[in-house]
Image (tube, rainbow, N blue to C red; front, side):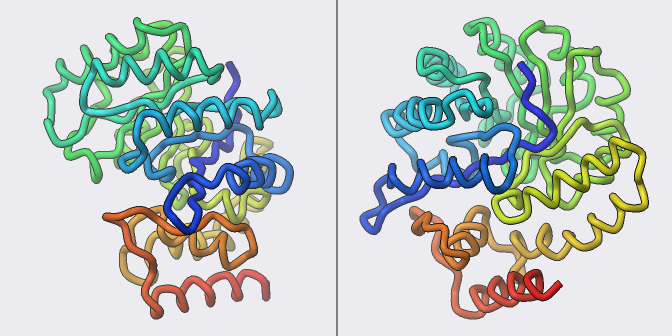
Length: 296
C-alpha cells in the first residue's frame, strides 16, 4: 500500500452538541483531497481527538471515511491505545470497515519497557493483514520507541512505516537501518524538510489542513533535487508550522487548527473536554497568522 509523502492527520468535526458532524466530516475529506492534495488521511488519531471518541464513534468514522474517500486516497485508521487487546479489537474493526492501514501510537501512561513495546506492536500486527504504521510521540506518551526496537519491528512484514516525533538523530538512525519496504515519516510539521534530508519519506501533518498544496510543492522540490527552492518554501511555511502549536505559547493540538479551519470557512466545530477553545488572545494570534499568509 502506497500512502504517499503527505498524509493528513484529520481533525474530527463536531456539531454544536459535541457529536460528530457527519456532513462536515464529508466536506472536510473532500476538501483535503481535492483542495489540499493530501495523499492519505488518518482518522481517529491524536489530531482527531481519539481519546474522547468512544469505540462506536471510531468504528463509524472508519466506515464513513472509507466510503467518502471512495478509493481516491488511502484511509489510515487510528487504532492504537495502551491496552493491547483493545487495540487488536479496534484494528480488526478497522479492517472490517475497509481501512487501508492502521496507525498505532506507542502505549501511553503505563510506560512499558522496550521489550513490552515490541511485544505490543507485534501482537497487533499479527492480528491483521493491514499495513501498520507505528507512531512514536514521547512528549505525549511518556515513552520512547527507540531506534533498535523500531528496526526490530520493521522486520515484521506488515509493519511498513513509522511516524516519529523523536529527535532527528533517532529518525536518522531508523532511516539508515530500515529495510527497503519500511518508510519513515516525520510527525512534526516544522521538521518536514530536515527529516527528508536525513532519509525520511514524508510527513504525517496537521498543517496540511491549511497549507497542504504548498507542502507538496516543498516535498516535490526536495525529492527532485531543487533543494534551494525547497528551503525557500520551508521558510515561508515555517510560521504556520509553528503557529498552529504555539499561539504564541504552547496550545494543545488540534485546538488551533480547528479554529483556523472555522475561520477560513471550513466548519469543523469545537473540541471536546478536557480540551478547551482558544482564548481571545490566542484566537487573535491565529487570525493574524492566517492574514499574514494571505498577504504573501
